Length: 354
Image 1 (cartoon, rainbow, N blue to C red):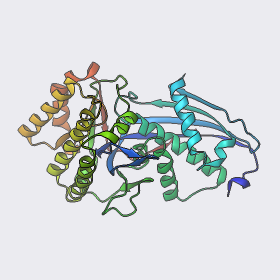
Image 2 (image 1 turned 135 degrees about the horizontal axis):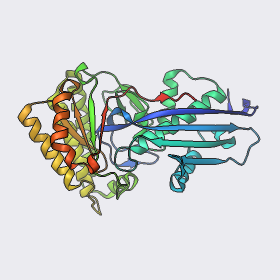
Image 3 (image 1 turned 30 degrees about the horizontal axis):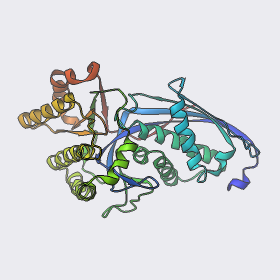
Image 4 (image 1 turned 30 degrees about the vertical axis):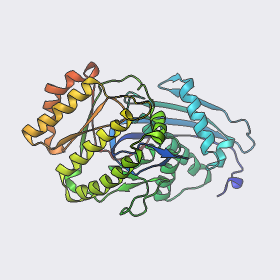
């Protein structure tokens, strides 16, 4: 059914809970419009989620679209303006939006704007809602089409959001050796060793405040970073190496690549012009203790970082008991208000019953 065939008013409510994700292969730097300078691969989480509900009213004669947005029960003008710009940007791809009023309610299960990819879960949840509205108005798609459309629409709001619509691992960015990979949307990664199933991720909250340099600003600074070209090449090489490690179940290589990617990301921040630093002293203390504990015990654990001070400690499900004991005894004291989110590999977005 095309846009012209939607002739009757319709209203309804849709809702999605979309998880955040943590990139193991990082992308930092992009081209218009939301096209990555290098591919990225991420782990989809479970507990760190955005829950979004939309009450929509479509009327073919409506030319004065109304948009209301509340975050965690309160009006948030800054967020609303970003949502408004985003809706306008995707309307050419979803034309009925120009005739649809939207009342959006959103909330997070974790601190936003602190380097836990809150934009990924937020834009992922919003995109899923918009694609579901499209489906309700214009007819159903097959499931592969639905997820691909949601991934593409999410990407336009936040590049990393393209990966959040898939469970377990996801890849975004055209890459050699990955069939159907694309810069326009992410794809699920299913060819990995069973040793990485049920992967755990304990997020150590070093700093919950909004980060001092936004991800958008950080991406833009890569345009003049003297090490950008080398970084893009490194990321592509590491993706190929990680693909091999994940297929073989090689934990040692998996951890080494993941940690190199995390430190390279923050090296790009420090060597930008102007340079900036998002890691905090407690971040460095945590990283050092993780490496010492791994060396002493040989447990399968390693760290990664997003664009912020907080640390993602990834570890094998079979090693959960000793690692969580280590977290409580050695790492929690470095966290703000002893804040930790114990998370794990997730099943992907879930529709909210309305």
